Structure formats: structure tokens, C-alpha cells
Amino acid sequence: MTIPMFFEDNIEQFMGLFHQFLTFDSGNNKEILEGEDFEEGILHKIQAQICENISLYIEKYEEEFKDCLQGFVDDVWGLLTTTPLDDKYDNLVIQAIGFLTSVSKGVYHHLFKDDGTLKQICEKVIIPNMMFREIDEENFEDNPVEYIRRDIEGSDR
Image 1 (cartoon, rainbow, N blue to C red):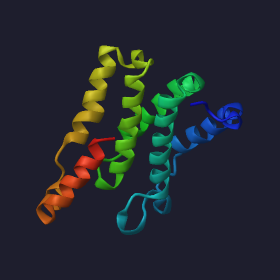
Image 2 (cartoon, one colour):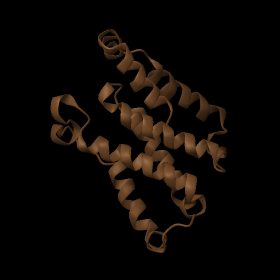
Image 3 (tube, rainbow, N blue to C red):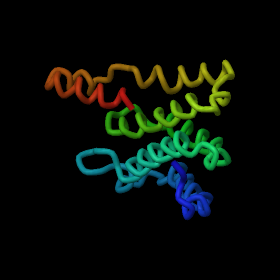
Image 4 (tube, rainbow, N blue to C red):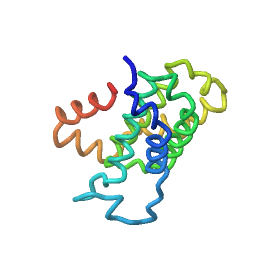
């Protein structure tokens, strides 16, 4: 499968916009950070979608995407280490981990070969996101089938 010519010709512009959204600092603007009823805000929805998009790009268009890769790894790593553990951010965390997984499975897996990097991934990303949160317990008690369905959906990405 080949990348559309228009996209290939303008990849720097597209990736520049993605980078801006991934690193956007909204301060404490609750309108951007939180949706209705304390749901994921528009910024985090956009960031999650960008993580999903760049995962697809690294899987399908490795050669065209290679120049942008290190910057996105840094951006996504920054998101993962600064995103709170609240359940409203689960989609963002799942997509961000999915991107790092895509990178680690591809020809750029050498970005993760350093023992210090692996230790940081375990300490700052994997272990904190494996914790059984109070909201998880409440969801499990209220509706165990729905809890398991959501857990499976998140873990298969």
C-alpha cells in the first residue's frame, strides 16, 4: 500500500500539526481538558486520535515516517508520563501505549534497547497503569460484565 502523493508531499506540515497538538499546553483551561460530567476533554480526544494515526503511519509507511519518529516517541512519552491516572484518560493512555508498542515492534525497536529506557517504561508507564483504581473496583462491583468488556477492548489495541 502506498501513501497518497499529496500526503507524502506535505507530511512535514501534517506531522507539525500533530506535534503541536501532542505538546499543547492548555494551562488549566477546563473547557479544553474536561468534557461533560468530567469526561475526557476535546484536547485529550484529539491527542488519542493522533496517537492512533501515528501508530498506523509507523506500521504502514515506515520509510516516509522515519524522520518524524523520534520526535513523536518523545511527545508520546511525555504524554504518558504526565497524564493523570483518572479513568477519563484511559483512551489516551491506551492509544499512546499502542503507538510505543508499534514502534517497538518495527525496525526502530532499537529506540528501546537501553536498559534505562526499559526501566523507565516499566516504572513510569506500565506499573502505574496496571494499578487497580478505586473507580475500577466500583465499575466491577456495579457491572462486572461491562467492566470486563471495557478491559478487554483496551488491552487488545
